[in-house]
Length: 200
Image (cartoon, rainbow, N blue to C red):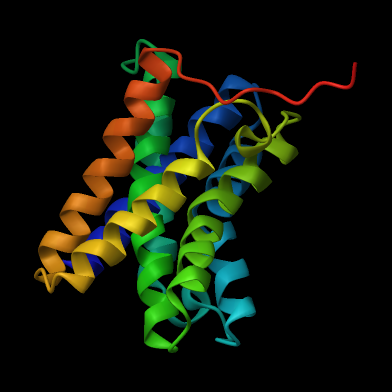
């Protein structure tokens, strides 16, 4: 289940990055680079922070293959993705939910405090998107008023509450990811925003 989630998250973020790059009218190489850094950016930072080097995608080429497949699929089916924003939102939400869980589990494996694990899950889920947005000339989503990183934090809390109640790992992964994905989609659909801080 965990490995399947990693595959899904990597594919989703690769396609999210590719769609963003195509929206910016980059060339194929540029689209691939954005897809790649979106998929591995958060995980790379996480692995460096916990001292796990070489980082995951350097040791397991399957992740590179998955990114290439995601890139190709995004290129081939770009015309069928009628509403680019909707497709991008969906892939980004899936990546957000899945990568939060991956970061949480990596933190648990090295014996970190649950609070730090939640931070690690948030970093894993969000920082590939941060790199994507910066390279594409956008203000990163987590720095805007959209509800984004906050959902990773609440998802982490849900995860540890269920873990404390000794739920099966597969249920933990499923409930946490569905919680984050569904609330991210609802936040966009119903225009739920965090208040901004203004200098008056």
